[in-house]
Amino acid sequence: MTQPKRVALAYSGGLDTSVIIPWLKEQYGCQVVAVVADVGQGDDFDEVRTKAQRSGADAVEVVDVRRQFVTDYIFPALRADAIYEGRYLLGTSLARPLIARVQVEAALEEGCDALAHGCTGKGNDQVRFELAYQALAPHLMVIAPWREWTLGSREEEIEYARARGVPVPVTKEKPYSMDQNLWHLSFESGILEDPWAEPPRGMHRLTVDPEDAPEAGAYVEIGFERGVPVSVDGRSLDPVALVSTLNRLAGAHGVGRVDIVENRLVGMKSRGVYETPGGTVLAEAHHHLETITLDRDTQHYKALVAPKYAELVYNGLWYSPLRRALDAFVTATQETVTGTVRVKLFKGAATVVGRRASACSASRPKCSPRSIRSSSGISRRACEVRPIESRSKRGVEQR
Image (tube, rainbow, N blue to C red; front, top):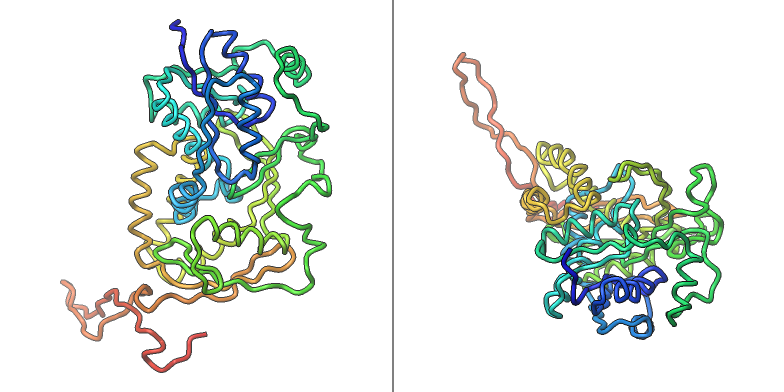
């Protein structure tokens, strides 16, 4: 096997990837470039950079891709109504292909000949990263330390780190693992592996307990243009600010908690607890806007496509030809999806209570007054698709 000379590592600042830095240098005698993608996880990146350097990294790249995460990954999935197994809004699944892209771009700029990640051998993420690598840079060698090294426990990792001067956690380990980005916060493993065990009170961070949410509900209006959310309560916001604002508003009312057992790509079932406050509101609002802006056949067929789109994303096939082809279909369907949706937030629920399409976007089948005669001689009315006139043009107040 060819020995790599310079490896780009997808670095998070956690114990696993910090230990991987000296392990790579010892195992392969190579240089290591730690690559950090800011997808809204809220870390102190100066601290992360320092930790990577103290762990032995020869170079550290920190790249802010929050806006790209929203516009190029989250919003396309939102427009596709992509929800895995009807519950999971794909927060982690959407971030991984972007992190891999950032890593590959850094590797090529830094002259690396290999890529490495800190995913375990039993999860979906190893597949997501490596499929992205194959799509973007198939010529680069891939190293997956968790499938090679003999470190078998957190205690062994800490001992390995201390022996090499790598900073180790000083806080007590949480009884579950977490992954956060701008779209969601996920919890899994540990005490959550028992599907009968209720998540401990105080675990959630983005949402208040619905029981403790305000007794009075709140209303929020979301504006869309061609299926893309562009405003909150009439105020235009950039994509990152829009998602952040809805996370705060919806989280304050306990909206966005999901507790599911999902079917993993690698053949096992896994319990995941997710907080996606802003995403829950956006998904509900977008779906309801489509009900008044898409014709029946398009709406029904799009509902068939959505689960497949979600499955492709979940399974790490973001860069696949089929996902791109489905995106082209989705884009065509969104030409008319422009308007405003009003959502009530109340004790964990996001309920659409109003939807209004822009006058130029709404359409529905209408029958023409003329008739045609079939080959059998029976007269029937001919149906045409015509734009709905704005109610305001007809002097009718929109509600």
